[in-house]
Amino acid sequence: MKHILNPFIDDSVVSKDDYCSRKNLEERITKKIENGHNVSLIGDRRVGKTSTAHYVVDGIKGVKKIDIDLYHIQDSCDVAEAIIDSSKRVLDEIWDAKKVIEFAKRVSPKLDISEGGVSFGVATQIKDYKKTLNVAFEFLNETIKRSKGKVVILFDEFQEVRNIKNGDAILKYMRGKIQKISRVPFIYVGSIRHDMEHIFRDQSSPFFKQAEVIYFEHIEPDIFFEFISKKFKKKDIVLEREVYDHLYEICYGITGDIQTFCRVAFDDINKGEILSFDVFFGVIDTLYKNEQKYFKKILDGKELSKVQKNLIIQLALIQPETGLFAKDFQKVVGVKSPGSVRTALSALEKKEYIYKSDDSYCFANPFFKEWILDHRLIIKASAGIMRAGSPLAGTRLDFGYRYSFKKK
Image (cartoon, rainbow, N blue to C red):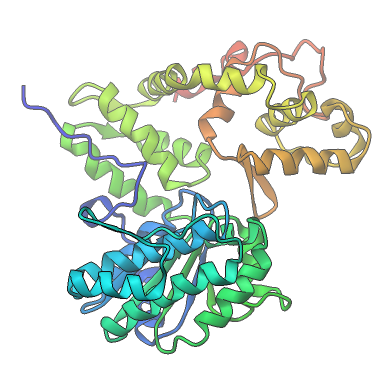
């Protein structure tokens, strides 16, 4: 039997047929870029920001893309290396290799040159971030010069700069360098909303009004339903609309997480099967099986404090109408002040278990939330919904939760 390639990608930037178009947003970004304006794309993690940014730039003829990923940066040297590596990739396409090496020697003695090529790393012993970043921007400016200005510079996870040592000072230095680069558009992509808003909307920030802020909203449910239904047809699988709507809801409309479910479902489901609620929960159980050791480690291990564990369970249950800082909720979580709740929330955000979207807290992994609801043996329910120790204390599966869906 011929193997059918799984069409769902949930772990990388997507393009071509793997990309779900957002025409209005793409047109808006394209217009800004073609006019030489800077754009800041802000939205939730795994919602498609980076893929859309790449899709737009790749669709502009005659333009080179300098793609600078800042996700794993730890210090100013990492920022500089990311800029240099990205510039090198473009220089390799448009300039003679020997001249690139000559330029590297001229700019800094810290670059390693061997028969294998040029290692564009900035030595970590350089403590002065200005010297380190100056090397990076010399490379960037040379790349712009050699490409005759026909480039778009894309910074991904730009908010990470603010969180490293001397982050605000580094941003100020980078802003001074960037403002001297005229008619070259920059796209700044970021998924930590409060950090990105501080960088581009706070009057005290050096990047204040340096780019037009575009909020990256969740894709319309109908558009994404059509997109993934088409992919399921490669195996003649029919996705029921009610099942999709439920999936969209539990994943907060995050396309990356929806595709995670679909990737597992595509491998798990037989050819020609209907993806009904019966099948849906079977796929959910497969996801649990793959992840439950990790989930258990979070709640039973030592990384989280008792208060943080209580809080994450309560956030899975419900975000109470009485508020996260009400006295009843504090009592359930095991603290005595609103400040302690805020501290626990901040810790969970920093450890990337949750993130704030508008006024609600969401799980970075929505299937962790579902697992808590389905499999945590004893759940102390939030105030006003299910009292701890009451006959209702338990898990969703204890109360026939899935059966109510399967009856539909």
